[in-house]
Length: 119
Image (cartoon, rainbow, N blue to C red; front, side, top):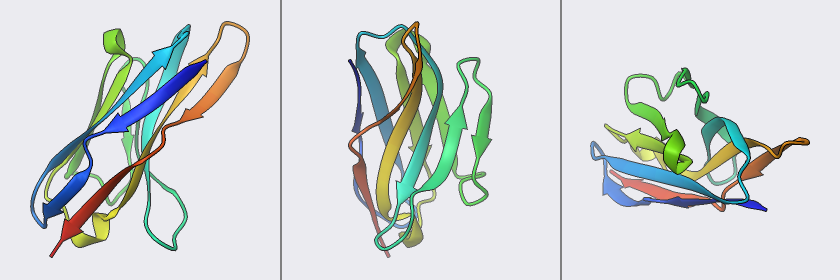
């Protein structure tokens, strides 16, 4: 079994920064794309950013210029640097990963980490 564990959320004032981490652990064969999503109260989960194993990135329009996704393949970890945070960024942030077990692909999700931005 492979698990994803997020960390780094918290309470920050508008204009501040946070760095989220998501580490995969367990019987890892190969991790392909990884990504971050967020879900605000009463809203659907939405894409924030994704990154391939080769380092190619994709961002939601709301994240461009403020957030940066990166990964360390040796550590099976993906990061999300959140800068210039706004109150509307308040949400639970989830990471996901496409894990190839050698037989099949598994889409994994972490438990989520709360980010709260005060005005």
